Structures are given as C-alpha cells and as structure tokens.
Length: 494
Ligand SMILES: Cc1cc2nc3c(=O)[nH]c(=O)nc-3n(C[C@H](O)[C@H](O)[C@H](O)COP(=O)(O)O)c2cc1C
Ligand SMILES: [Mn+2]
Image (tube, rainbow, N blue to C red; front, side, top):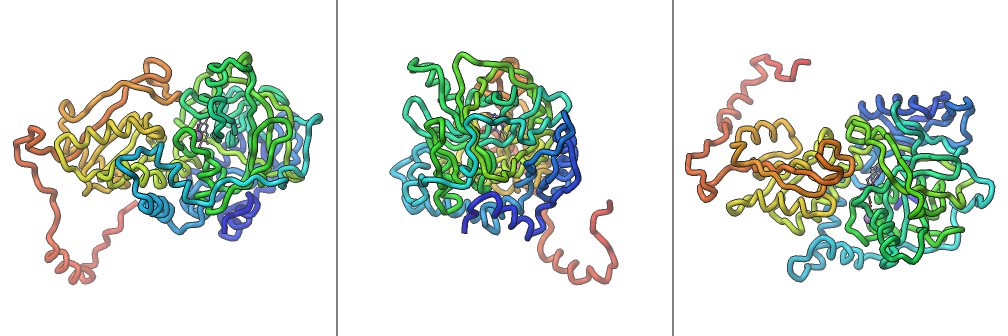
C-alpha cells in the first residue's frame, strides 16, 4: 500500500532503522549541512532535526527539519515499496509491452499511453491535512528552518520544493524541483533553469502577452514518491503527479489552492501559494550546487507569496547538494533505473547504463550496447543527445554488452584499451546544462562521445582484435578443489 503521507514514510524508516532523530539544537546555517554531509558520505540514515536553531536569533524553530530522506538505495526502494528498482523498471516495461506501439513511437508520445492504462490520474479532493492551517494574512517564511547550505551561498534556500505551474499555452500542469532563495519573509527566487518545465511556462506567459503574472504553488513534504516525481526529467506536458500515481499505484490526491488557480498534494506538509512576474527578475545565487562547485549568480524570477497553508505541526523537508555523492545521487540512481526501459523502448540495443556519482548525473554516462552494425555506437550517442532527460550528457562512453557498466574499474580498463582516441572520440556542439561552468557560453557548449566498443573490419579496422584473457573453467575448478589446503587469503588488504 502506498504511503499516505510523509509521516507514514518516516514511521517506516524508523522501524527499518533508517532514520535518526537529532534532539540536540543545531544551526540551520552550515551546521546541518556539515552533519548531513558526513552522514551522506557514509550512506547513513535519514535525519530528523527536532530542534533546528536559527543562526540569527538563536531561537529554536517550531518546525522540525527532515533531510537525507532518500539518501540510500534502501530508502529509495522503501519509498517505492519494491525490493529492487528493477521491479519498477519491469512494471514500466510490462506496461509498454501490453500496448505495442504502432511503429517507432518516441518517448514523448509513449508515456501518456502508459498513463492511459492506469487508474492513476490525480484525484481532486475537498480538503486535506495541508489545509489544517490557512494563513492569508499573517504568514512568514521566517517560521521555517530554511538552511544556508554552504559558506559562499547567497542566502537561505528552500532546496526540495515541488513547484507547480500550469502552461499558459495548453493548461497542462508541470511539477519541478527548483531551489528557492529566500529574499525576504514573503519573497523568494525561482531557480527554474532555462530548459525546465517551469521556465517554459514562464516563456509562454511572455509570448502570449495576455498578462504579466503567472500563478505558482509550491509544496514542501509529501509522500516520498510524489516528492521523487518532482525531480524526474519527464517529457514536457506529462504531469509529474500522474507519474507519481503510476509509481505508487495509487492516485495522488490534490486540493485546490486558496489564492491561485492550481492544485497541490492534499497530504503535503507545507504549501506556499503565490506568483511570478515577468517584470520582477532578480539576481539569484551563488549556491553550492550538485556539481560540487558554486553555481554563479544569475537572473531568475522572484516568487511572491500570497498565502501559506500547512499542517498544524508541519515537518520541513530539506536536502543538500554539494560534492558527490549526496542524497541527490540516489535520486539520480532512481531516475537511471526507471528510465532505462524507456530508453530501451527507443533503443532496444541498449543493454544497460550507468551514471557514476562523480559524473554529477550528466557529465558522464556509460552505456552498453549490443552492437549490430558499423557506427552503431555513434548512433546511440546521437540518440541520447536527443533525449529530453539526457541531452546534457557531456561525455557518453559506449561499450560492448560484455562490459558491466556499473563496475567503473572494468569500464575504465576496457574503454582505455579499446580506443584509438583520434578515431573514436567525437565532439558535438549543442545545449548544455545551465549549471555547466566550463563551457565558453552559458547553456551552449560541446559534448564528447567515446566509442569504446570493439572495432570491426566494416568500420575500417582490419587488424586482428585480441581476445580478453579468461582462465578456463577446468583449471578454476581444479584450483577450487585444492584451494582450502593452500592456506591463502585473497581478501583485499586494506
Ligand atoms: C535536490 C535537487 C535540486 C534541484 N534544483 C534544481 C534547480 O534549482 N533548478 C532546476 O532547474 N532544476 C533543479 N533540479 C533538477 C530538476 O528538478 C529536474 O531537472 C526536474 O526534472 C525538473 O522538472 P521539469 O522537467 O518538469 O522541469 C534539482 C534536482 C534535485 C534532485
Ligand atoms: Mn516536467
């Protein structure tokens, strides 16, 4: 059964010893980051800071702070209620198989078809816990333990919001996780990057020229799958709440907002209602980002609050990003596993893929393929650069299907052996992530593909290709038999 809200998930985590309550007073400025970072790096538990303290006045916030919620494989699996993420991937695959697409349907057209099958559409309900307190007049962000994450951050940031907007073009909903820098008690930044759903809606507002303001609702804290859906790079116009319903196998219940024409999860902890304005663009940042470096100050819309609704005793959910791996690595891992079947739908030759933590999602993607024709690896690279989620892949390494992409040592060993760099490395130019700091221009730069597959005569390689060294089974078996008597220890020495 799907979790009804964050609290049910917290109870489950406690039962599984995957959550630690911190009763000590801790500053929301930097201290929570330092503690969480150490725990993250050790793949430790989720942390519930019961007494987050303001660094300004030393007072303890009346709201506890939850962090590192999904920061391990186990907690991602607990959130999705599966014993392995491959189970979810299989569910997606099964659905795709049930409705064979006519011809080569691309991902964009395919996903709504998946959704069609389900009874997973979000359901609007009259009320819910998030309406326990409705503050139209006397509200302030100062009530919440909003963190300053890293020393050079430009301020305090809400780091895990579910930002809901509706497209001025077609009325479709989008939910994205875009950090929000607190400017004052009722104003924040809205850091939706240029390629993201929220930014696209904002551009349509401008294009249509009908008004200068766009409603925005921000939910903080909900059942874990809904929270996870907000960070998923879904095709444009596919509602994240619908996808969440599919993943949790139960529709997301929504309630109407008080002051804006939008709906938010009824089980949310806190909802901020408000608007962005085409005429109010402000400097946002810097912010210690998931690349492990600060993203520079840049211009983004300001978000003006018009109302806060919340539970009586809400839990504020935060996350930190920074030098990998952190909690977001595990969210990325979920994306990697769940999107593999979708990628395979378009590219059945793809066997597996992996994004190592050090590649901060898009800097390095390793793909194994069943190679069938000359230039096949190049075809796969180009296809990946055309996908909405993976278009930013700065370096794609394509290997043969006998390489385990999850074993970075094996990939490195085989890839470095198999490439003739001048021949096998290809550069392309195109859009890059807005956080990319090495490209010559913001948002526009180069990407690299490495064809690390075995080269074929039909690809112009006429020298013999050597076999990989593998001991024969007979010898292994014989040695197995005498192994104990040899008194040798092959466990790796520290
Ligand atoms: C912890 C975390 C923080 C994020 N912060 C931002 C952000 O500030 N701005 C942004 O554009 N994307 C951010 N992202 C990535 C987006 O949430 C992600 O690209 C998502 O797919 C966007 O949804 P959309 O495709 O509907 O726009 C963040 C992701 C995570 C996991
Ligand atoms: Mn989206």
